[in-house]
Length: 291
Length: 316
Image (cartoon, rainbow over all chains, first blue to last red; front, side, top):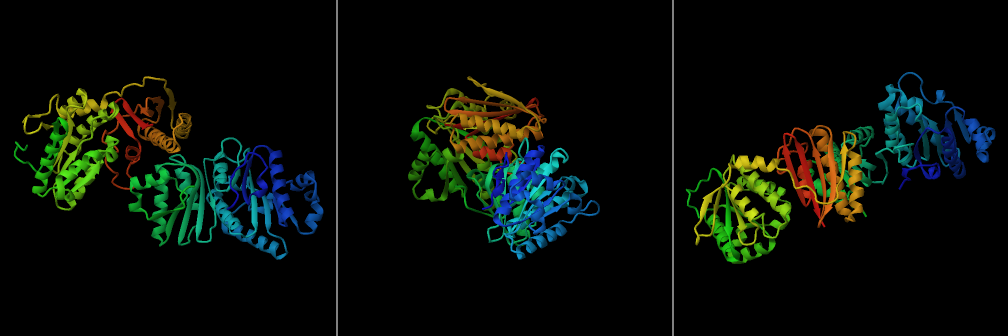
């Protein structure tokens, strides 16, 4: 199981492998980023920070991580200004992003590191409306890449001062661990590999308000294994609108010759499923009832 | 009992007013046997203890009858139109005629439940009035039921009869059935007698409504299953108010003797009182009320041009 949950402070960020850090307090962001990278350094990861002013931030942090020059010289740390990390014009390609980080992660492991740990300031990129669909897809691809055991882990930083709230909400919704000032995102989903096929974990509340987002987030995922498992264990509420989305997913998966398995569904959800007769229109099997 | 010429093309909905167990079993068994002789598919929906007795008395022929426990399928009377709709569809698919016995208003039911039985009986006339034809006998216990429930039996059934020995028969009393139905659907529900928590909500407040209801239900020390159920009910009802009831509404919560109640009202254009009583036709059909009719111990809907109120109750 991957670390998942909502963080209200930087403690706990070390254990996460894919974090959305949405912030309006720059000092708290810096603390979280430093904690995240320090844990990577301790376990033998190569480190990368995509963002401006990162060298000063690390020097302020002190300790082994503060030795910016020697870490950079030895190849353990790479500091990338925002302008170099992402395209400032032209199309944003999720696949190119993935290829880039895949290559860097492989190269880190080939050099004897346990993996690649990245802090990335993505506010400008995510806020660019030309990229919004591609960006969400990139976050899904990245999450899948993290979950696959690649050795890649990332903290994605979003400044709430600059990014529109809808962008922050969407971003927080596709990370297993998120820290968001104010109201937490009502719904999140992420990849949770289980060896038998694609598995997507869902957390939070699915209702008429979040059902559209649920559909949009699911569309961004690239599930194509014969068996797709949707894990509802961390769902605290789901209504008819949510069940309808799952039935539609079941139909779509069956349409391409696959099968949808719903894990961790509550008793009430299963009763709802039976009463509405979704079983007749979507072939979905239930496994692993809630403990 | 069949003083009228047997008319197989219309829905015959008849109250059977009995006194005591023997009159009950004699009358019901005569009706059942007549149906079996005619080759009808017979479905009997009675409280479990009565089912046992009827089965024993019917002997071998009991195997030809479908028996359903009214305590279960009719716990919330709002489920029964769906039960009969399904039975009718299955019977017709098998090329047979349906004959049913159903006693939703059994003696000892709570006043709120009896009120819903009355509305249900009136709605049956509308639900099946257009055909295809079938027969439904609704036994009413003249000795044990309150007089109001008996008056409602007379008002809601186009025909009524008493056991052959007394030989009384008659037609519905009161205004015509359609008017009675309209009146019953619009009649306000009795107001709560104790403390009530009330709140207004708007289009963005559906999550807040269910969070409030869930936390209040927990504070009533309801078991987790019932808390989850009321949370879901509040969410679906608030969603309906937002989508179909003018975009806003009022939620009210209270506890009364043996019950916890959640009520959602809106000022919208009014709803179809039949809404949710039949199973949804397809996966995209509106289904919130149908779901709640199946899940809740009691669902009461009152509607008029001035708005709609839905009250769900769980017993404890």
